[in-house]
Structure formats: structure tokens, C-alpha cells
Image (cartoon, rainbow, N blue to C red; front, side, top):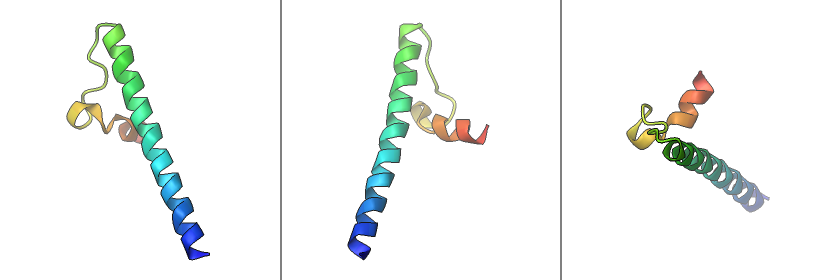
Amino acid sequence: MIVKTIGATVVVLVGFGVVILLIWVERKLAGRLQDRLGPNRAGPFGIFQPFADMIK
């Protein structure tokens, strides 16, 4: 029971991490295609931009 719960928690956390990474990559690529920098204000390389968007 506990092992399944821990496994499910790990899967969910990894999933959240992948989603955050994909959002960041998509924004950086869109910025590059439009000859812009993309998100670069929130943390190094804009990696905290999804968190800043949640707060906004």
C-alpha cells in the first residue's frame, strides 16, 4: 500500500516536472522563431517563468 502511494507520488511529480520543462522549451522555441529572447526574467534562463505565471 505505501509502496504504491510513493510510486504514484513519484509519477505525479515527474509528470509535473515534464510539463514545466515542455512549457519552458515551447516558449523558448517560440521566442527563437519570432526573433525574441523568450522568457528570461524569472530565474536563470527563464526556468522559473511557469511559477511566475501561476502567481500572476
